[in-house]
Every structure is written in structure tokens, then in C-alpha cells.
Image (cartoon, rainbow, N blue to C red; front, side, top):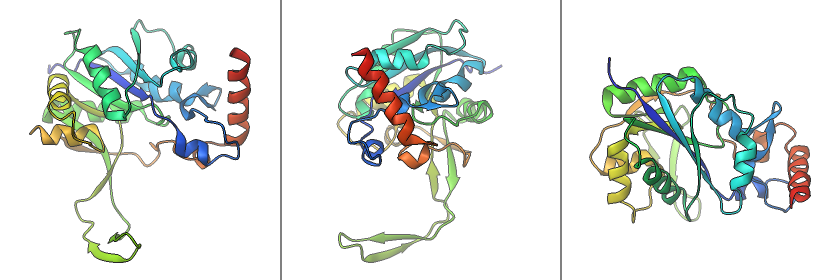
Length: 245
């Protein structure tokens, strides 16, 4: 049987500026720590991975000053003996992932790594397993959904300059799963290049990635409208955080 052991990186070091700016409250609200069905967004983003066979360890990237918040957001996860490490991220998502990968490089008991947005609370175990199976076969895999709307390229004034053929174009999601040694190599070699996601660096390094059919429900929380009753939950989060300080 092919080696499908893997570790998990969960990214939660972002600023949540777009989410916070979509709220009436002007204070910064870390979207990963808001509650969905009695548990945090971050909790839901991590939970399905714990029941996937082969998971060895988890590294969570956190914004400076939010490590304890991240630990609290995950403290009710069922204890399956999987070790969690929390690292303070860098100035960008890319640099944060690199720090997490360097942390994982201390271990040699897994072959693949899954990189998951901490703000994707609706990921399913079934989707994770499908991506992992494709990664084992093709070296790397990520979930994607084909574009169904017409696509246009515009200039700085918003005027259409080109009609883009949508055939073969996909909206990509996370988790993205890669052979660990190869994605670490890609991050190290192209650390000075801004990439929109880890798969872009993987491709730059010459490694292949398979598109696994994604899930429309696997959205990334970006705006207040993505969280039911977000205004109330944001207020509760800020009040609770104020009480701890």
C-alpha cells in the first residue's frame, strides 16, 4: 500500500481585515475564532482531518499575540493523540506557511503535508481523503471547481479589454496536499516570489498537481455575510477577549 502518511498545516496568521471591515464594529475581529455551532471556525477547519488515517501532527500558524487564542479555539477538539504545535506567522501567508514547513522538517515520520485555510470550516473528511488519494498518485493535489460564469479581463478603469475563454479554468480551494519534501523545496527556492497559493510555488519548482473535484460548500470565510449572525458573534468575541486581557 502506498505511503499516505501526512502532517497538517492550518493557516490562521492573517489579519482578517476584509472580514473586520465588513462588520459595523471597527475593531479587528479574528474570523477564525468566531463561533459556528458552538465551536470556533478554526475548530471546524481542523476537526475532519483528525479522523483521516495517516495524520501524524498539526502545525497552526498564528498572528503575533494570538497564540493563546488559537489554542483556546482548538481546546475542545477530540483528543486522538495527534501533537499540535503553534507558530507565530510571518508578514505574509506564504512566509507563514514556510515557517510551518520548516517546523515540520524536524520530523521524518510522514510523506505528505496538507495545507488548510483556518477560515474554511465546511471542509469534509470525504474531500480530504479524495485529495490525499490524488496527491499520493500525482505528487500533489488540490480541490477545484470549474468556472461556470463568463470571464472578462479589464483595465485600470474597469473597461473590458479581453473575453477570456473559461474552458479549463478552475476556482481552487484548500486543503492543498503535496509531497512534503517537494513543497518545502519549492518554498525555499521561491521565497522571494509572491505566489497566490502553495500550488503556484509547487508548479514553479516543476512539480505536478492534480485538480480534485472540489465542494461548493467548502467556502472560505471572508466577509461577515459568510458567518450566520456575525455581528452578534463578533461582539461576543470582543467582549470575551476584553475580559481575558
